[in-house]
Length: 227
Image (cartoon, rainbow, N blue to C red; front, top):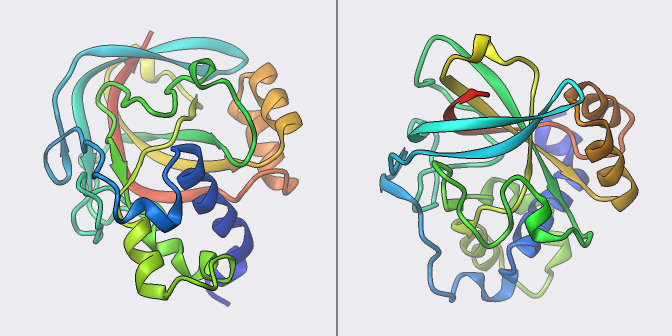
């Protein structure tokens, strides 16, 4: 059984939640004005300098960004940024990198500005758009009145949803590339518990217990140091 089929339901929820969290309804997303990509060219982000917060080992830490995002164009994407959810990178930007797990609230009310990267805003050196169309087969039963082509088009270029950051190392405080992995959180109680514990160890426990979506790969990398 394929990875997509095994996680069909949860991936569908993750994709749906990402679209809804950004305020872009599936039925109208394709017709709406395209969101900004924050890319110089597809796959290469605008080089900016700034900071966001994150969670590490029970503590709040801060990321300092100094280079635009990278999305591997060996992975096809319909997003203006060149970034894709549901498919892993083929060629990374470096031989050395660590994982960055982002938790995304799905179908729950979370104050936008309480997140490390709020919905409706483009965080420094993050892509402004993402392609969710690889999750279309999982979403199709939820939208029987849309053709596969219509739904795919609506999912190809959606705003990047608000999220929290979790890391498993500080890499000696040195800047490096980070491989982005997505985890959707569907229950407010789980979201609040994850934020209280402030660690990937707890987040991973919730993933294994089926309290969240599985860990979903992307072709996206961010570049920062941990302070």
